[in-house]
Length: 585
Ligand SMILES: *[C@@H]1O[C@H](CO)[C@@H](O)[C@H](O)[C@H]1NC(C)=O
Image 1: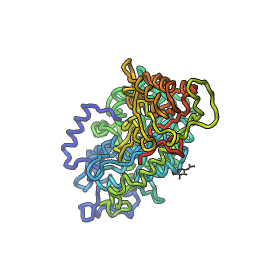
Image 2: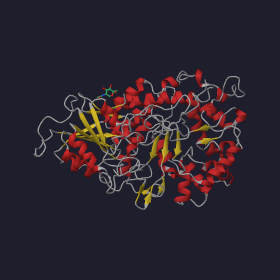
Image 3: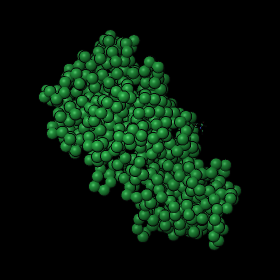
Image 4: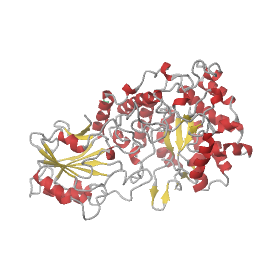
């Protein structure tokens, strides 16, 4: 999520108000037949993308060019070119986290897949590819309807090294090999690049690099300097990015807010021009995290003037600024000879060529290869089924032992408590702060799901009767007023107890790291008390992005089963044949 600086925004607003074409995905349908520019070389589909881009850039004034260096790119009405919002997100489904996607009208929602940390746990590359494909259909459909862009700043393949990181949920985890496979498969599904380079969508691997701290103690990501050895970069932090570019052939890479070894990543020529562009051979564009340039100028004081900041980032290899900084200071940077017009042209060549490959200068999309995609391709039964399948494959079973009879101490004893049996477990108590979870199940960088099923609703499809007693008022579960006793009573009288505990965005989020790995507040106390009193087997379901220390539950013989479900978005289903799984039927 970006930081917004009031002054720059005001400047940008005053600039864009002079432009008669508002920036939106819809107005980017340039080169329509019969339009004023349709005969110019940049509209000629038979030419290579880069030649078309070069022709368009050669027709622009300096003032027009610098307004194309930012995510909210202004139109060039005299050439029939509309404005374009570069910033769309599709981390685990089309998301309206960025301004490029707007739900509503014929597109009230989109299929929400489980948060990435969960799907990564499936270790299933073909699943990741299939999810990317489903998302690309829905995104193209929304683009055709004027409600999304085609440039998606997903996936997040930062290595989740610090388990307290609030954004770890977005990533495929801490393993460089799995993160690499994830990057390649998801980008492959999203982009569906053709042999000659045409793209269905343009993906972006972010945030390059060594970023796994948002806000911890006195440090935040806008000021953090990650001190990393070259070996650690090569062996760990950069591995998924390398795979993303070299094998995934992603059309974009995003640099991060933090510094690495004293240099802001968005001003690091060795990283951007040297590594991403030259060594790995990026065919696409490099974009800043939102307001990164502003951050290294105003917060990190990396350069003494704004024009020097423009020069530092563009010389390093940045092509597109998420944020207004380059539009505001680009012209004065050229006037002061901090950068040359040729630097601006080179950056625009990289961005505009991607737009050409996406078919954005081929006129109305209806005639293009994806023109048939529309509202009926969003939230389809097949995509919903794939989301259910992904949620099911995300579940990790940590423990499944026999439950000791009440009052006796028995260790692990063969046959586990799962699967529960509807015939025997007729009355099920559903306990814990996530018993009624909806939005908490969706994680961050989500969109508007087609529908929700809460854990209580899911269990109700299998049990004869469900007794719902959360036991905690919320995930924080702090203070003496928590309704733990009522939950204990429910467990005492039920044939089985399902405890849905964990974290939510008030505890782990962008801008919010955890200070430890324990369950918040009195959640552990609730779980132990319920386990002690429960008449039937106890199943602990952990819903979170980051890891939780659950040694107390692992060592408690009364807790028969523990599953980790990540942030599965959907609803809990206890199926006779399938342990504990999640579904949204
Ligand atoms: C991976 O996911 C796909 C799609 O759901 C599924 O067909 C396949 O069986 C899965 N592979 C494994 C090894 O589970």
